[in-house]
Amino acid sequence: MKKLFLFLLAVAGLTACQTATNKVQLKYNDNGTFKIAQFTDMHFIDGSPNSAKTEATIRYVLETEKPDVAILTGDQVIDKPSKDVWPKIARIFEEARTPFAVVFGNHDAETITRDSVFDILSRSPYFIGERGPEDIHGIGNYILEVRSRTSDKPAALLYCFDSNDYTRNDKLGHYDWIRYDQIAWYRQQSKRYTQANNNQPLPALAFFHIPLQEYANIAGKEATVGTQGEGIAYGKINSGMFASFVDMQDVMGVFVGHDHDNDYIGIAFDIALAFGRVTGADAYGKLERGARIIELYEDKPDVFTTWIRVPSGVEHKFYYPSRQPLPLHVMTFNIRYDNPVDGPDNWQYRKDVATEMIKEYDVDLLGTQEVLINQLHDLKERLPQYAATGVGRADGKEAGEYCAIFYKQDKFEAEKSGNFWLSETPEIAGSKGWDGACERIATWAILREKQSNKRLFFINTHLDHVGKIARREGVKLLLERAKAESNGLPVIITGDFNASLESEAIQQVLAGKKFFDTRLLAPSVPEISGTYHGFGKAPAEEREIIDYIFVTGGIAVNTYTIIPEKRNDIYLSDHNPVYVEIEIK
Image 1: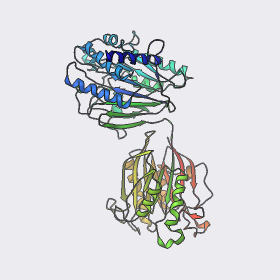
Image 2: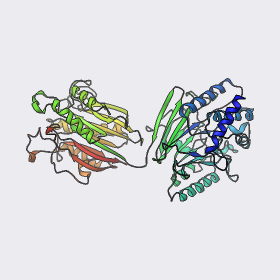
Image 3: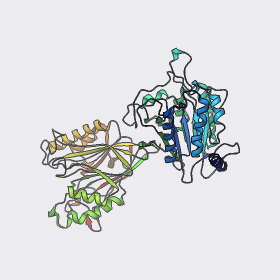
Image 4: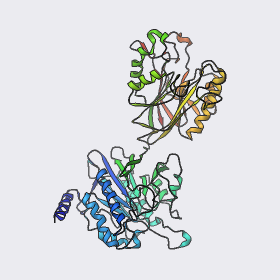
């Protein structure tokens, strides 16, 4: 009796967020977020001990993540008596007070008709799925509107499709596909919503069971995130569903199930293609059971975040990229090594103004040169918002100067990083190259910007000040490594090249028009004519630009600045920092 009372109380509490048609209304929260839990391949079997484990997993996810809606993407119940299991599934979401929707997998109709499932689920006040149009293939083709937090207008759409089950002709393969009439229905609905939104597509996601053939385009790619534990079991006929998503320009992400050892996500033609995480303990597969979570943001409609939630924690967080360019503030800065003979220009007098300058320019990516270990500690202490990577050039550990890379750790994740020496033996720490006077090193990192998910290759170096051959061969090695390690990503090169624009070394960088000097791409340049001044001792007319920021094509340069040499009458260094504001498209 007590359980009945609590359930009735929950139902009563629900009525405030129902529409006039007695359907729960999905809506962005007051903070502008909307969270979806995707459960897939639950494989409930009545009486199986594993079904209790599956239920525990679902309840854990609902309690931990507190989603605004749960979408079940197929193969929920795989054995008779199905009619007794579906009410038990509904009860899980009712007791969690979580609206839920269902799309069917290939196994769901093996023990009960799709219509019968809808008859059962329609009795639940928390079920928001629909049978959909009767004149197209499948049952369960429908749209869930997510309304704005400030009005009753839809602000996002969740398309649900029946991907059907099996072909009736062995010549056409084993698994079915989303049919042409379903695609036509989607295109009509998408067009209708776009026209009602001042001809701007509403941000949308799509959910179904059997993956599309286009998932093959992201499998094995470096940018794809998650587990790729098996092949892709898609239908052999490509009916053009993905092409219509591209054409209609509203669907940002597609979420499927079916392949239990896959939970990866990647981007194809600006659309995220994702597998959910298998939920059912009676399903095959090695992955820990859980769910995929997707969070939408009303104020950033072309962005979403998704991750895998399992009882042991969070896995594979992924940030869907904005279609807007990624703006970045980049600086190269030879800080001048801590030399006692510098007197009043010694590092101890400069370190505070130097770090304040970096913070003032709100630098995202910083390439430094001549950094000794004590200076590295000073920079880290004064710039706690940055992470750093690099090694001392003398021994590959802490001895000698660093070409350390700094990046905002709340904005970037370093996926990979490394160092090499500008020498005939680049992997040998402390090796000196050609006619160089000193050991020279380059430090690099592949960085992922967390909000947009855009990735870039950042490399920083300091060429020799004496050896002309060392500079030439050092540039050659630098460019070869950048090409090999970047694997087609946008590239940013920073450094003290100890060479003027007309020099052989710099012309080497610019040859082939693969790399561009940001100074030459900027709409305007400063009056300061050089970047090395020797603490003001070099005559102004003799100063040259020897510090550079180079970029690959497709990166716009909005601002180029040679930062003045003094702050509060204190020299920042014997070099001027170079600062650019760029956009990666």
